[in-house]
Image (tube, rainbow, N blue to C red):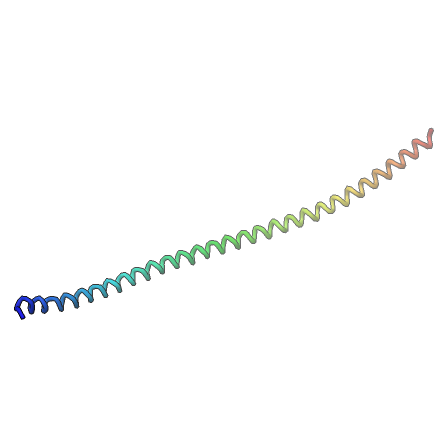
Length: 106
């Protein structure tokens, strides 16, 4: 074998080992970076879900208040309808009495 071939072989072994080492270290560094970014994304997602949940809770409370007011209005409307029905009956009675008294005078 030639001396140049032996020297090149001796130099290539550490070069190969160092390139494997650097590739492994780069992989680990990128893996940590990817885990960090994934953690941030996961945290943002959880935060957004929490915000959506609180918004839904607020809307449910508002809806309950609207339902209570609607029930109050329904009850008031029923009372008004009963009062109007009673008033119409009294008006009809008064109207009949007036009709009888006018009819009796003639």
